[in-house]
Structure formats: C-alpha cells, structure tokens
Image 1 (cartoon, one colour):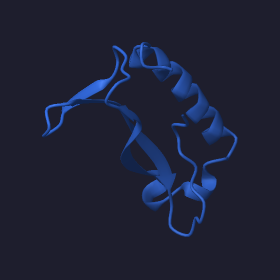
Image 2 (cartoon, helix red, strand yellow):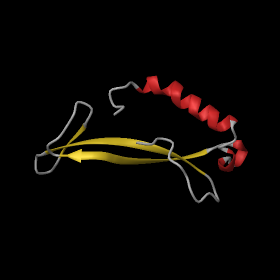
Image 3 (cartoon, helix red, strand yellow):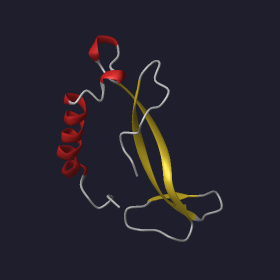
Image 4 (cartoon, helix red, strand yellow):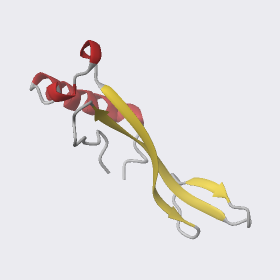
Length: 92
C-alpha cells in the first residue's frame, strides 16, 4: 500500500504520467470548454473493520462505543460530455 509514502513523493510520477497522456493525445477526447479537462471527485472507503487496523487507518467511534478502522480515498476521474467510459486517474 502507498499509505506510508508521503504524497509529495508521488507528485512527480503523476505529473509525468499526465504529461505523457497529454503529449500523446490520449486526453483529446476529454478536452472541454476553453481547452480544459473536467475532473470529478468521488470519496470512498477501500477497507473497513472493527478488529483489524494499521497505523494509517482512520478511526471512527460508533454509537455503540466500538471503533471502526478504515481507509478512505478520493478518486479523481477525468470526465467529458459524450464520453461513455471514463477511467479513474487513481487506480487501487
């Protein structure tokens, strides 16, 4: 898992992937108003347990007093009008 890695470490890698997708024309079908890309953000849980946890887990205290451990993430997706399929930018 990437949880222990600082986000800043991944930025150059993600920027390089984005640059290559752009320069190779892979993003052309998604270009929108003013030559921009529209990005939808969606939050989700990728793991949840009342018994298993790790140092990177988010903790939530339930009404019954038990602690729920979980991992959450925001998944950005490039979207465009007329596009039926949109690929998440952040795969698990």
